[in-house]
Length: 356
Ligand SMILES: [Zn+2]
Image (cartoon, rainbow, N blue to C red):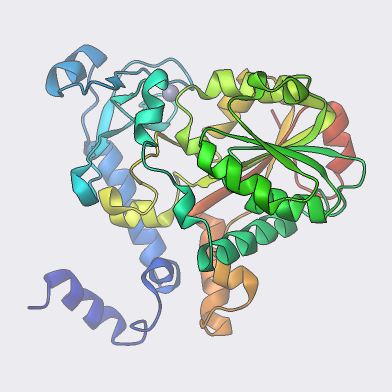
C-alpha cells in the first residue's frame, strides 16, 4: 500500500526525484526546505516545556544514567522532543533547552560509566571501504578550511579520539608532528601499527605527559564532540593545551540539519552513543565559556557533492547547495575555533571568523 504522504509527494513531484538518494531529497525538492522549517517551528511551539522535577517523574533512570540541566546555559526546564530507537533495543530521550535551543539526551550517561557504551570494540569497523571513506571525508573537511591544514611542517597536532589512526596517518603525511589519544586500547594498538612517525596513546590527555604539556597548534575532534558527557571540562582542557595562535577543528552532526527537521526521531544523527547535539547557534556558548576568541564554519554539502562524485544534475546540485546555506542545514557541522586574537589574526583574511 502507498502511504498518504507518498501520494502527496507523487502528486507534487511526479517521479522526478525518485533516483535522488534519501539524504539529498529534502534539499532538492522545490519548496521542501520551507515546509520542513515551518513544521519545525510548529513542533517547537506545540511541544510543552516542563520543570526538571516534573521531567524526572516521567522517566525511569537507567543504572548508568543521570538527569541534566542544559550545559550550555544552565536552564533546568525541559522541552522533550524526540525518542530515537535502534537495533538491539536501545532507546533514549532528546530534549531541547527552551532558553538557548541546545539539544541533548536526557537522561544522559554518567561520565564514569561512559565505558559501558563502548564495551564492544569499534576497531573492527575501521578497515577497508570504511577507512577510505573516512579519509576522503577528512580530506574534504581540511580543504573546506584551506589553508589551515595545508602544511604541517613544524606544527604540533593532537587528534582527540583518534581511533585507529586514520586521520593521524593523513596528518603525518602533511608534515604535522602528530599525536592522538583514544579510550579504546584496541584502536590505539591498530593506530600505532599504521603510523610511521605519529603516535597514539591510550587514555585522556592528562594521562600522557607529552600531551599534558600542551603547546599544540592544532587539535582535531572528528565526530567526537557529540560523545562528550562533560564538554565544558574537555574544552577547558583543549584551550589550555593549545599554543598561542592555535586552532581547534570540530566535525559533528548538525542539530540544525534539514534532515533532522524532516525525519525527527529517525534522524541519522541520533546514533546509539551520541549524547549532545550542537549547531552554529549553540556551539558559541561552549567556546565562549572555555575561553576561545572566534569561530568559523564551513557548510557541509555531503561527501559525494564535495568530492565531485554525486549523480545530481548541475541544477539540482546548485539547489542543494543553496538550501544547505540558507537553512544552515547541512547534515554535519564543521567548525574551527580560534584560541586567541593571534589565531584570529593569523587566519582571518582566509576564513570568515565570527568573534566570540
Ligand atoms: Zn540552554
